Length: 73
Image (cartoon, rainbow, N blue to C red; front, side, top):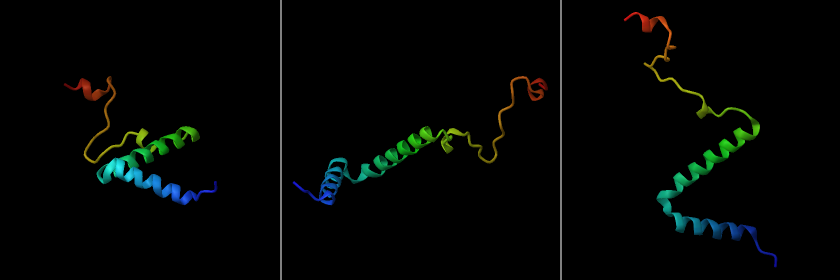
């Protein structure tokens, strides 16, 4: 009638380890973490860091279609 929740948690974790195997657990955890992060961002309305474009060193931002750089050739 009164079961220990810690025992239940340990049993579930053992089943997950046996079912998904150790090589798949990091990817599974990463996917769950990203899902939680996206869910929280959706609830709060704040943009996620992955939504913003990132510039790497050595790359220039794209020029608009009617820019003077296009007309020089």
